[in-house]
Structure formats: C-alpha cells, structure tokens
Length: 329
Image (cartoon, rainbow, N blue to C red; front, top):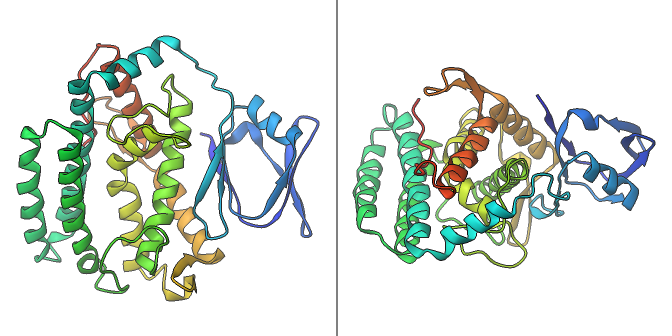
C-alpha cells in the first residue's frame, strides 16, 4: 500500500538520477517515490523543474500548505486517465439541473446521515446529544422536497450549525468553541477543523487523480476558477467520519492541548508538534480497515473514497443510480 510523505521542515527538494531527495542543514533524505501516493509540503521548500517533472512522471501530486499549515495549492501531474467521454458525461449531468440536484442532494443527505451517526456514537455518555440528533433528523426529512441547490445548501448549513453546537458537549468544553470561523481560524477548535478539512480535501483530490473524473466539475459546490470543486463535494461526505472523529479523539484523549497551538493577532494554528500528531492520526485513520458489507472484504478508509468516486462514475454513465456513502458501523 502506498503512503503519504510529509515535509514539515524547510529545505530543498531535488532530483538525482531516478530518485528525489529532500535536503537541509540536517542532512539528505531519499524519498521512495515508488511507495509514495502524495507529497505534503508544510515547510518552506525550494524545488526545481527537474524534481517536479520527475514527480509528474511518477504520477505523484504535491500539495502545498502555507506558513499556518493551511492549503495553498496542488501540483497536479498530467492526468494519466484522461477521458473525453467522462468529461462530457460530467458536464451533461451538471447542465441537466434535475440531475445536478439529485447528485448534490444525495451527497448532503449521506453527509448528514454520517453526522447523526457521529452523535449517536457519543449519545450514551452524553444524553443531551439526543436533542441535537432529533433536530437534525427533522431537517433531514426536508430533503425530499429540496429541488434546488440553494435549498440543499441551506439545509446543510442548518444541520452543521446544530452539529457544531454539539462539539463542546462531545469534548467536555476542553476548547472554547462558539461558532465556525474559517478565514482565519480564531481558536484551537476552528484551527483543528481547518487543518483537518484541508487534509480531507487533498486526500480526496489524490483519489480523484486516480480515476477518469475531472476534479473541476462538481454538483453541490459551484464550479469555479482555481479550485478542485469536486473534491469539496466528496469531502463533505467523509469529513464527519474521518476528520471529526480524529478531532474528538485528539481532544478527549488529551493528545492535543492548548500547548500545541500558536496565536498571532486573530489567527490560531497548530505548531509543528501539533501538526505531527494530527498527521500521524490522519494517516492511521486513512489506512485502517473495515469489513465492507457489500464486497465482503476489508477495505481502508482511503479505498472507501475511491469506491465513492466509482459509484459517481457509474451514475454519470447511466449504469447505476448514485447513492451517497453512509456509515454502517
């Protein structure tokens, strides 16, 4: 199984013969490209066209993050599975508004189901969460009459507001959290959510790269300039069961504390140690396996994302109606 490679320190990324290595004042380290799925760059790293070209030849996306640890952009290698037919089908399903609405509604309906599953996981120890569950279930019932993107997004926003209200309950108020603030995150909880969501976005993008799907054609989020909006769509489904579960674990087990954050004016972000802890948990989560109830074999969380993309492809080509992923365990 291929893995992610994280560069947290500043230095230089270079190519020599048939390998790439990272070097700084501490020394030189070879990057085993044959075993690497994605490269994540958090430090200030210099690289030249020889190194980037070699990554492209080996189909390795490189995700870049800014000083604060939040997503800045991706070097996306030349697509190896180009399909004009698939692009046509993606566009057709976007332009047919009823089809676009169907896909978007399925995505958020399954995402909200996974949110409820999260709350039910903790409700036995936190009975007050039952109120949050009931409120969200009442909103989920309204999806059957949601026939435009604006309504779907509005319902999704209402569900997330209720869900976020449950975060302090789940984490015993270890971190102050009143509302979701993204640009910039202003406290440890928002910082963890932004950091985790960036990882989820790039993980999905890496999986899209290994399919025939074009990452800029989406259904829930409006396709736009300079973003891979299909990755945003699919991320909504998996954030509750991957990112949020990691955050709850890190906080409740005191693996992340106030000491793992730095604050500048109204900006709060993880320090290097905090990033290392989160990245380790994220990798372990993505590579952990569950028994797939339909395939009757063990699959990783990363594979679940790939399977979700295959389901979308089948819908776009008219082979099978799309049904968003719902957590069954």
